[in-house]
Image (cartoon, rainbow, N blue to C red):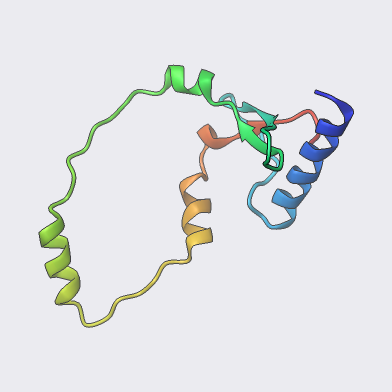
Length: 104
């Protein structure tokens, strides 16, 4: 990685730590973070999960009946909205979602 790419990646990691999107930690499943640059777009940090994908076992689940779900919601007295940031953070709160970087 070039010095410019390294600085951009460091800045992204600082933002992620500041906004508590990620935290410093360790895992045997840590995947490397890279910087992807494409024409006409800002550089974007990406996590290379190829090695993790090799050890993951795929599980299949049946889809819920949508009509039944709609009827259930229609009959509800109250409907609440979830905090998307927390929902996203909780879904990635596992040892398999760890990324590695030489910068932290």
